[in-house]
Image (tube, rainbow, N blue to C red; front, top):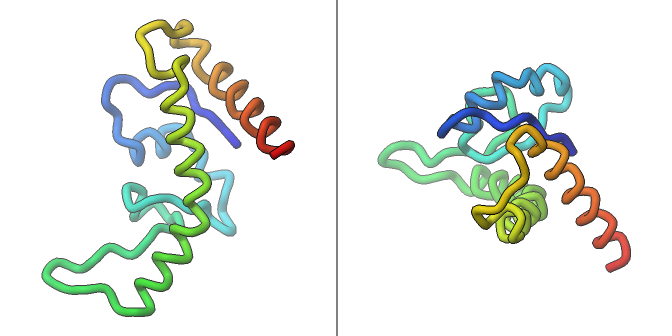
Length: 114
């Protein structure tokens, strides 16, 4: 698990990950991601072609990727609902990576006893 420094404004995820250099550390196998990261050399679901449909093989491929990514997406949704990250009262922005890392560690600890 890794947390980057916050990106300024409304930076797109693909631009932010390119800026961090994180992808240079995963040459083989590449990390999985959602469709927003298509074209960055990551494992992403297939996009439906314009005016067309996905083949059954493409649908099965997408299902396999999404099944593996589902726990990560649930964890992200869970973090977003915590009051610490949801309200106007937050820690200073420069402490954000440490805050998120602590929350992730606590979540792993909690889930190890579930």
